[in-house]
Length: 444
Image 1 (cartoon, rainbow, N blue to C red):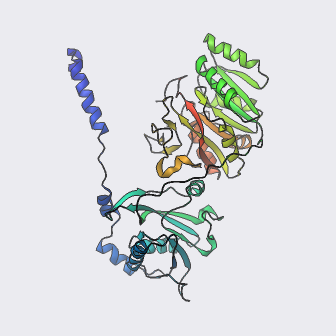
Image 2: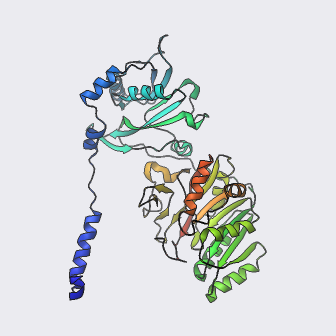
């Protein structure tokens, strides 16, 4: 305050710069030191493991290209295992459940890897597939590049062509990459129990072209107030670029007075494939969208902000195709700022507060963590700025919660869908611009 009263603008600027500088300085984590503190065993740990009797046996198979050096590294790590019930040959009679582990030559197991697997199997006998996190070994043999994997995310793993460097399978799981078994029998062991030699494998996902058949009518639900320019751009992009053949526009106007916006709405009302509704009273995003849904005739609803613009022409095909799968309940899109950086690529717990957008401000073509932005995958939630859901599921879930008038109504809907066993999918190939919160500013 003293600087402000004195008119010392430069002093104020220097103080702000120092404060911001301290906020930006995030200590770099040394992975070798982190492993020493959190991954490497102590002698007491080893003594505890040796005193624990576990009878689960493992059949270990070396798969992939022949690599004598890598094979020797892998075999040495197997010889060092604290849990000795493993073999490279079929297990002898009398040994407990036979689980199979396929290892690439060069994968080095943590000394407690097999014990950790056997311990989980003993505690959870209904499990049929277990996978762990892993990191990588550089040219000097030092650990680097940890890959902390998500809980079961079959779309991601299919797209990446792999699950982890360490995967244990019960005979009932079968050899398929993603077996057709109850997801509740699959367990992510969130520990670094393996290290791959060399750099991380680059993702090589297969881009599955969406079906060209019609999957029913899509009703696009757009709340709006004033801001005629962005609204006109949004509607124009839908009409010019969207290739999906059966689209209904349902626009709910919240007390618009701006002349340009009024003209846009009046013109839209003349379109027989569109519906224009009025909403009066305090702003309540949930109530406005629920009003639009009640008037919509589509088999699929797409919530869409009025400050978005279509980029990918097949965005609707890609989103709607996921909803052909009964286990999928909600689908979101990749949204970019006007400068081409990422605005939304899924909503995740704990980022920037209660929930936050992952990969925000990264380049729009960034592959994302583990390459996940190259392929559809499951997320905790997606933004209501562009969200697709079957009309029947919308009704059974009760639409948006009108107690959440401004923020988190979309997250709440996603969490309710997941509670009912429905997956929430991010489709990164459905791409739109999002000029975030033009109509009403940012949420607090």
